[in-house]
Length: 263
Image 1: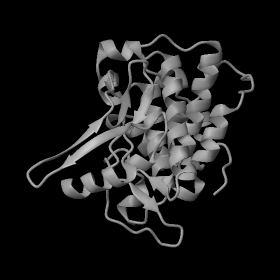
Image 2 (image 1 turned 90 degrees about the vertical axis):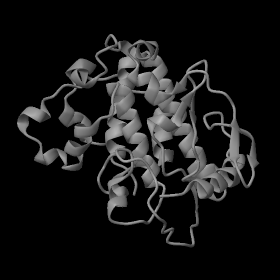
Image 3 (image 1 turned 135 degrees about the horizontal axis):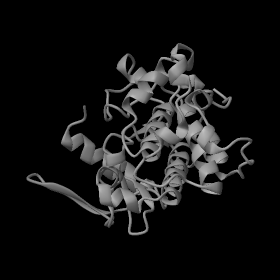
Image 4 (image 1 turned 180 degrees about the vertical axis):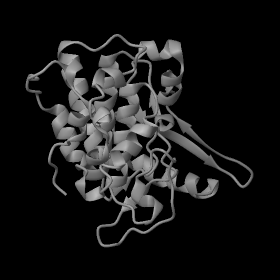
């Protein structure tokens, strides 16, 4: 794990070069022998994790806002991976590191674990991240690539849909849909949705289904099987075809069958 001094140095070196509406702005910092601090823009609504845990605040995060948060995060990660030179791999994208402004616009924060991706290097590094959000391959290899962030994005997307960390559902998915029991195959998407909210309707329901399928594709155990953030961002910005069935009849097995992606 990174110590405080190393994380501080990483933050002040990487964050000023990341300029995107869905990435927290660093206004300044103080580095002193006795104390150090960073000055960020103020995020009125706090972290996504706190909003989802709080019963009252969670009700303010309606389905439209949650869809918008997913799209904002996807755009920010796409920017880090493809429009920054060198590319930035965050390595610790979690709901506690996603902050919301007064309009519930998402901002990725805490770049203390971030690293620049060197295309001419194997990019081996020590472990950094939050358990439950970190890609499973980091348990046996320290080689970092952009698919680590893709996995974390998938976890947060499911967390937004379910209203809580998807824990056991991720473990089921890691075991592959073929190993699930017939009963598990028939679990309905509507039963996975955050029950504190009324079910999404019409266009928003179609977006929630599309986002759920994307989330599961991002959680593929093999990094090569996950989509890139470019593919994710493109899908989220593409007009959705009308669903051939009611969103409330979509099963877990249908969500586990991900769209084909390019390695």
